[in-house]
Image 1: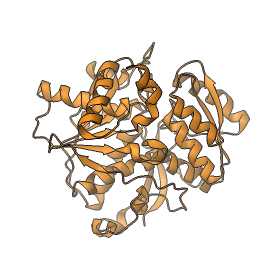
Image 2 (image 1 turned 180 degrees about the vertical axis):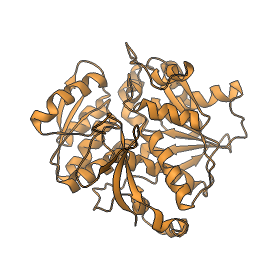
Image 3 (image 1 turned 60 degrees about the vertical axis):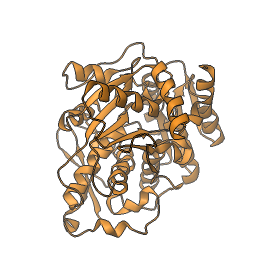
Length: 382
């Protein structure tokens, strides 16, 4: 089992002790990566050792912090081959606890907060991260302080309240929620677990990269389509590929990473098209896909670097296109996807039509949440 040795700043490369909880780099505010001593296992740790392990993200415990997890059975979600395209796979994260991929990151984040002795955690959320934090705090005996827009899907509001979280509804966007957390966290004694403002949500999300490799028999796909709000999952998978190559589990090949955002809130595609290293705040953000209503990702510089390094791209989907794709995935594949997840199908069709990808390319679409979380939204748009 690899030992957590330090945190590394993704901007300046500064090494910071992991003995105490950390948020961002004190020098430049860069997001931190958890780093492990993988050298003893390089070329020696066999990926075959995974066989027979628990079907959860903790089957990869050798490359996660060595602490007792606060777990609800998250991870190792199915990789479903399309019934209409043998080269298309759908990774269904809607089957995680609390119905979304957020379970992975918040499981790891809450686990480490408990290990560090933190009692109170705060988060700004567009919906699903709030539900996941509330659930894992309930399981771990910690306080969850949640700030989310008042127009989140009903399911998120009900979940958070039932899990016993302290919830504040904000007349605004996730950026307004983040501002409120930042203004109050020091006085209230909250640990801020916002996306990319602490190092362990990435660690939970990186397990998606390990699963993609393992479930495709250790041959990475030609492209991965990922709904990108804060971008933690995309960043986590890229980190996983780096670790797996170091261990000798995969080679230097990488999939094209495709960031998918809503047309009504598309800071990453705009920055990509303009060849900029960071994005600008997206004014008047609007979309039915709550998880994509993120006007500016904190670690946008990492996302854009990954798109460049992978020879990927960024694509948008309108709300109407997402709703049509929700129906298509449900009626043709039997998968009731969230609008965010359905946006990846929209993007896939666009890139096939443009010639960026070929129909023979092996591709993974991430459905990041269950459509059941959006019953009120989808029903209201009929």
